[in-house]
Length: 85
Image (cartoon, rainbow, N blue to C red; front, side, top):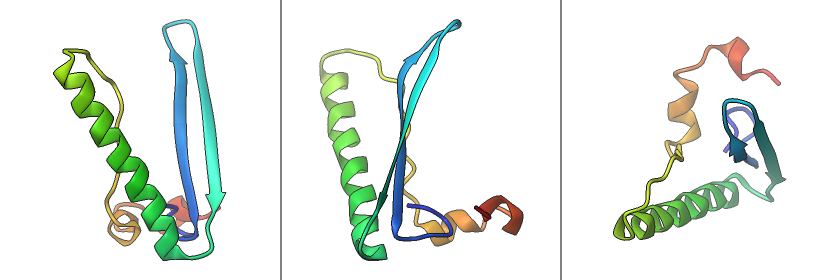
């Protein structure tokens, strides 16, 4: 969930990451409310948690991160200039 525009939900997918190649995709969605936007973020985070558990039971490594702190909490870590679009 974006720090400044709380109705915007974004995520970055790293398709390929190596010493020679870096391929990423950025996805952004404009939701009808800040509450629904938060639900989207939490749902995606929950799906990664389930996937992480599945990989762990299979003994497979993973390399992904999910940030689920509320936007107002995250905003305290950034200066005003960092949050401007």
